[in-house]
Length: 424
Image 1 (cartoon, one colour):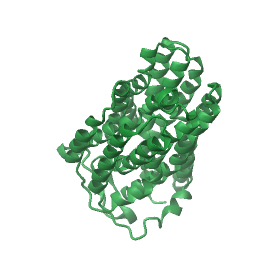
Image 2 (tube, rainbow, N blue to C red):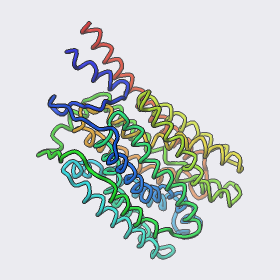
Image 3 (cartoon, one colour):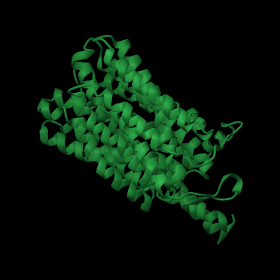
Image 4 (cartoon, rainbow, N blue to C red):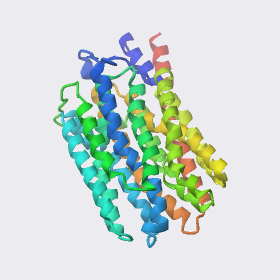
């Protein structure tokens, strides 16, 4: 191995990236500005997109509680959970296809069509009738899920047009939009349906975001996918995505229902989802800043273990104090975990042309866990509320996410060390 190849291995081991990245087949480096008016305007625009879409979607814990107790009381908790699972699964499952359209230059088309579809679905949800499960499922599960699929990944990927060395910080700022939205929308949802806020935010976001790199058209976009799967560190990361997405959403979906069922003050319980997401916003920014310095994988591993521990701590949720503490600590780990997934996958890419494909495939794997997570947890919970069952299931899965990325990091580091020793 030549000397020029060593930094690439060291870079993958640390999870860091540079501002000038070699393009495919070793052609001229792609210079990324890592700042400037257009770059930061794009960050603000993407923030508005995620605030109004995933911020609204992450408030599903409010819907879960309301549907179980009132609006869809004829349906089981497991059946109701399918609504949220499908809604969260679609953005991840469709990520490889959306990523390819993005690479082909379809960024603005995706954002505009997805935004219109999401807004229309929110309006249709407001027209759904009580105990009409199929109406809620079509509007919230399918319609809003497809809208999220078309807007989410492009809003995250566009950051990498403008940032490389500071991509962790930029991604964290963009994804904080979903955290802040998830903190604000639950308050509004407990009193009204805030559909009027969404269209203006989507409009502002689309006006601010700009692409910078030319379309990267690939005749056969899936030609090199097999090479990704035989990349051992990336395979560990895919396994981590599958297990992690199966467990880490549990508190976001069930914490309000658990708080109400265990007799926590109702007024505070209604703010449980808000607290979880609000507390995480600041720590998400701190976590992504740390990722730029120490590598996203190292920070991700710690957050996964911490989040898993706090899921187990939910067994002690019996009063207002325990609710606040769990929301504070879990929200901090959970929000940082959400922000670092894509930077972790990007750090495993060999060039910018692989970022979308590797990230999209990882999200597709995560979609399997997202789809089955809440229904399995709801089935384990039952109508008698056996909380220890879904908590144990989710806690072990969340911890498995950290184990997967730890194995990924160890493999990359050992391989880099061995290659360094072989070349002297």
